[in-house]
Amino acid sequence: MKKKYIFSILKCIIIIFFYSNPSFADIVTLKDKSVIIGKIITQNKRIITFKNSYGLFKIRRSIITKIFISKDYKDDIKFLSKMGITIDEEAIKKDYFAGYGIKKKKLAKHKEIASKKKKDTTPDRWTGGQIAFSGTYYSIIGQLKKILTIGYGGQLTFDQGLDGLMDNKRHFWFPGIRIETDYQYYGKDMAKLSITSASSGPKWLLPLGKNHRGKIVLSVLPGLSYLQVKKWDIEKNSISFSLNSIMGYEYFFEGVSFFIHTRHVSVFDRDVNLNSIGGTIGIGYALW
Image 1 (cartoon, one colour):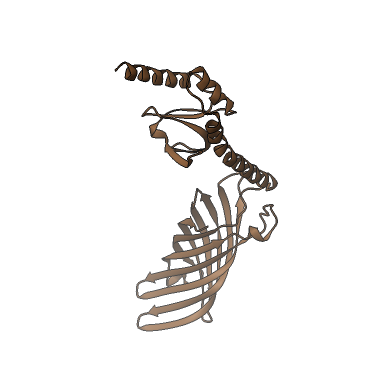
Image 2 (cartoon, one colour):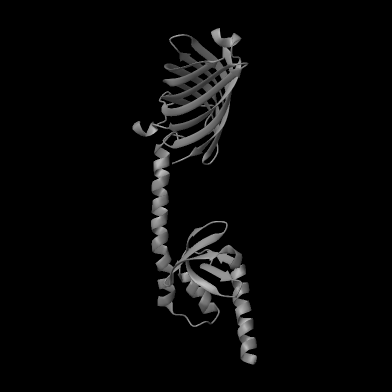
């Protein structure tokens, strides 16, 4: 009983000493009173990655009572000596350097990444791809306004930034590419018009300020449209050239964007031209 009592007191003294000396070793104390010596490789709010001669392993912060960081394995030896604990100097060095070698590689990698970022004077380069879904409310203008007034539609869009073709600088005049499929429907009384379009063209993202997540969007999309017209019992189908002009605002989060656009649609049919303006709202998801 006395030995157990003495051993418990000794463990308590060790833990108290760790708590009051935060500059000793890379030492992790756990809720079960275990003490681990080595090097912390990485850490975040939930987990630390630890390395010693037993290997590389992860420890949940929820079971950690305290973490101490040191500069040298000699602090471990001094600390254990003062406590009168038998020291295996080679084992302590082995634990320390097993982690230190990996940590040096990590630091070198971070320096390399930081160096690349320093060279890239504009970190918001557009090199990723995005898929987007949107809906539009249209209003007819021009010749057909007496027959058809309002309509609605939906778009499926793919955007790809092309800054990777340029140097490390961001050239805001250099566009990406947009590919879009669009469906529009207009109906009034016995007159109905549906348009299915496929188009592609340049898209510009113009910044509102340094490191600002919001961008001004400009795009011009030439394409082809398939028209289905029905008035009373008369039906007519045709394929015509179309042009979509887009201007709006897009706000980017991590992997997601929200946008609101105004668009002008022109369909150049051989019988009659269709012109409409619309308001678009949608959401985009980053693919890479």
